[in-house]
Image (tube, rainbow, N blue to C red; front, side, top):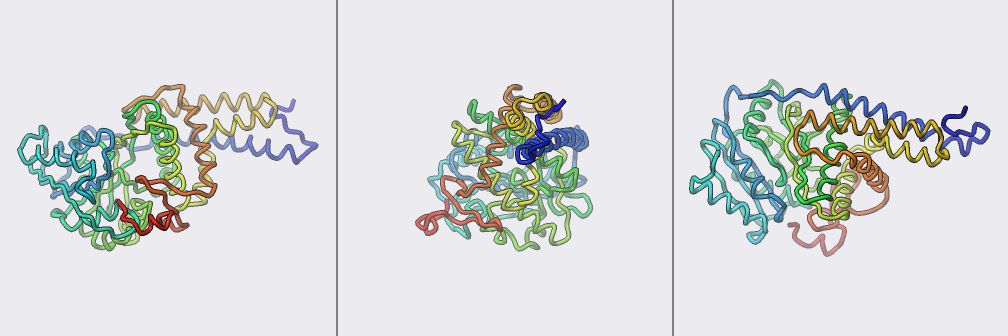
Length: 408
């Protein structure tokens, strides 16, 4: 019995079906590896305290009025940290909508009205229009870096929310021998309904298991903007933020720069929350496509290898190509089941927002479409602008007018 509908007498039709069977089988193996990697990820300690609490400067580059921004900024102020904490919010323009949320936080801090705030906390909004390259966020960081007061420097994207032990855990991890930078993985926090949930699921059931599996197999070296913590002297040793001013994947390149000076980049044993506020399919598409094309530009072969992370898509394609053969019916069922098991395991390991169970396979198919589309020519859309992305990860405005305009 020909379980997979492969016509051995016609290799032109048999080869694609056989390839789909191999890809679907490899994708099922990936799900097993992802489950193993998830179990091997260090469990979060109940209480982690650094042996000393050096002063910390937190840099928060801001742009636009994101959903939940005010609450996310407050979470960085409410830290159970013994040392002094300096928080610098940065915008390029005083009328940036993000500045309003930052001013509210600054006003509460100066009035001493922040409940649960760090014992020694100073908060400041920095407005500086200077641009230093095509990456507006890095230009913002360069402007903020001139005001750093403390030895430990933490960078975190504006759409990140953290727990009160966040700084304690980072400081403890950074005090390990040979460690030059600590970074965090993240879970999605949907804030705006159905489409934001679809966006968050891409993080939870795509990015998160892929990153953990890559680290376990020593095929990935993540450094993500959700959190980057390093010493001030390390930042100076790599030449400051100026070295990444034109890079779209600024976080990844920062990690590579730290490794280049002989220091280790390590993952923290906890995840932070990454807010999603997408309200339409087009918003989810643009965001996911930007991430996909960025990763492809950094590691083309590794990105191509991530084809094995889509078991549902390969099994369904095989089901159609084989004329609904029994073998592919079994593979499709196993693919859906494996993705659901992985989804449940992630929700248990990293408690947070549990997504609708039945959406998992659909999100897997959407991610496959993004993966396939990322190989086609096109621009990336970021902060209201279209950019061209070079093979070396350097970004440039896609239009001549934009190239001459100020990057927000």
